[in-house]
Length: 470
Image (tube, rainbow, N blue to C red; front, side, top):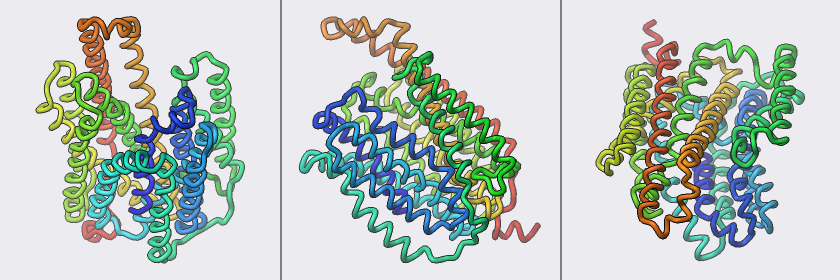
C-alpha cells in the first residue's frame, strides 16, 4: 500500500505543478513529454518486473523498483532544463513500472484469495486519498517552496516504504530458473516502447505518414516478429507462451484492456467538460470526480465481504461492468442533452462503484488460475494490458475530439469568441456534443468488455471452503 501510494501521489502532484515547471524551464512544446516519458517507461517495464519477480523473488525486485524511482525523483528535483526533466521522468517511470504489478503479486503471495478481496478496499482508499491529497500538496509546495520539492517529497515516503518492506516482507517465495532472457527482454522492451510511442504521439505530435511513425512501426513489427520466434525456442523466455494457454488469463486481459480503454478515454475529459461546458472552476471541477472514488471505495469494501463468503468472483464482476455500461450511457445522454449535476454526479458514482467490483476481482481470478511460477509475470501482464488499453482509449478519444472540433471549424470560430457571445455558445455546444460522443463510444467499448466477461471461467478460489466441498 505504501508503494502504491507513492506512485499515485507522484502522478497527482506533478500534474498540479506543470504550469510552474514550464514557467521556470521553458519548453512548452515539450510539456506533454513530462507525462508521456513517465507513462511509456512505466508501461514498457511492467512485464519485465513480473518475470524477474518469478525468477529472483519479490523482495529484491520491489527494492529495485523503489530505488530506481527514488533515483529518478532526486534527478528530477535537480533538473535544470526541460530535456533533463523528461529524461529523469523516464527513469522514474522505469521504477514505477514495478509498483502496481509487484504490489499485487506480493499481496497475492501473502493473502489467500478468500481474504484478498477484503483488503482491496484499503488499496482503493489509498488511491482516493492520494488523488485528493496530491493536488493540494503539489500546489502548496510549488507556491511556498518551489516545484523541485514535489520530487523531493518522494524521498521520505519512499523511506517509509523501504522500511515497511524490509521489516515485513520476509516470507520465502519459491523461485526457479535463475536465468535472464536478455535477448527476449530487449526485443520485448523495444517492441512495446515503439508501439506505445505510435499510440501516444501518432496523429498528434507526429503525423501518421511521418518518418518517426514509420521508424516506430518498423521497430514494432520486426523485433515483434523476432520475439514471437524467440519465445518458442528459448529455454526460459521472458514472456512464457504457456501463459496464454490459460483461458482465464486471456479473457481477463481482454476485459481489462477494453474496460480501461473506455474508462481512460472518457474520464480524461471530465475536467474539460466541467470547466468549459458547465462553467466550473478548476478546483470545483476536480471535486466533481470525487464521487467516482467514493463509489469505488464503497463497492470494493462490499465486494470483499461478498467474495470472502461466497468464493464467487464472476457474478459480481458481471454486475459491476453492467453498472459501468449503464453509467457511461447515462453520462453520454446527460452531456448531450445538457442535463445538470443531479444527473451527472450519480452516474459518476455508479461508474466508480461498477469498476470497484471488476478490477480487484479480475486480479484475484488470474492469480488463482495461474501456477506459482507464472503468477508474477501473469499479474504484470494483466497490468500491462490494462495500461495499454488506457493509452489506446486516451489516444482514440483525443482523435474523436479533434475530429469534431475540426469538422465544425472551431479553430476559426474561437478567434471571434471574445467578441461574439454567439461564437462562445457555439464552441461550448460543439465540445459538449463531442465529449458526449466520447462517452457514448466508451459505453460501447465497455459493453464489448462485458460480453467478453461472460466467457470467463470461474474456478474455485484456493483456500476457500467452496473448493474443499468440491
